[in-house]
Image 1: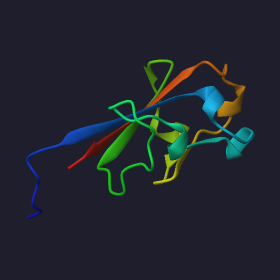
Image 2 (image 1 turned 90 degrees about the vertical axis):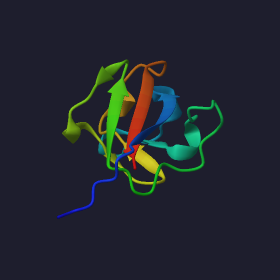
Image 3 (image 1 turned 45 degrees about the horizontal axis):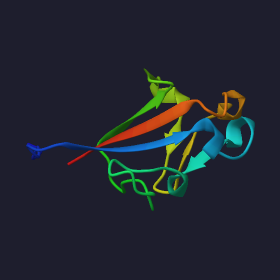
Image 4 (image 1 turned 90 degrees about the horizontal axis):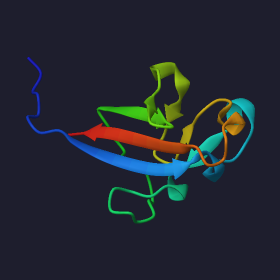
Length: 94
């Protein structure tokens, strides 16, 4: 039987679509282009999150909308968004 950790926490990172680079399937936002919950520039995304949620303009996105690593989140065709569109990435960690 697997051990379930009783405490979960969230780590949130914010940016705007204009903080990203690339076009089409290669569009991504680097972790270093985001700010964390404390308002400080981020250095990396969590290394072993339980899951993550992506919000574009406050709307949660489907699982197939993005992929994430510790260094960047890739959002295919994110370059078509208005540069001022807010992006929030929420990681659930334990």
